[in-house]
Image (cartoon, rainbow, N blue to C red; front, side, top):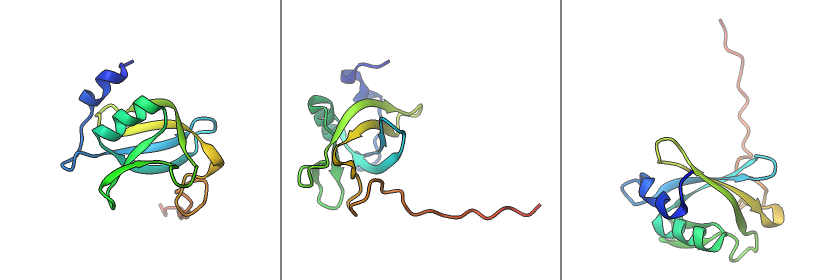
Length: 117
């Protein structure tokens, strides 16, 4: 276990100072979305208990749910063995994580055909 104050120093950010963050439903394990975080958004998330991301399109900090009221409450936070991806287990207030108005951003199903031997 790592203290929150030590976490940022263990992460590997990309050239833009960003790291991918996966939001997963704490209660049922559904992967809800992927977004980007920087050191500031991580610090804000840890300080408030609500997820903040970095908006690449707007080049600004983004408090998830600030305008939609679909905030994400942090339950657990992990980073992977390489320190280059964050996993945030969250309580999704209002049940909607995707900007399209659905629960999960991962709704595009791809049918995998059986491989021929």
